Image (cartoon, rainbow, N blue to C red; front, side):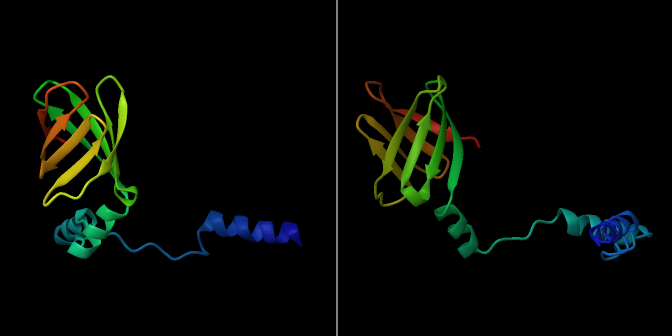
Length: 135
């Protein structure tokens, strides 16, 4: 009995008779163009969907700073934290504060504040530097 079930499953896979038949490919230029546009057009998210995604996942952003430093920042919104890694791989965890606008994360001696694509990075013992999000 098991070999019969296996044989039927194998025949089904080999002939593709058990699944749905694929749609016929378009043959004229307008149909091909329309199919390509539909395939390449991403579904637009509503504002509520975009906000929900931003608030409930980790978002990575790369900043290039005026002091030639490159920062990779993982914003962990559910935990209200950000992990900042510099070019040498050193990492520091910052905790979210409540700014009037934009972002504000800090920990002892470190701070990342900003709005839009601009931010100011202050690291322990060094003067603050302006940074721009590039990714």
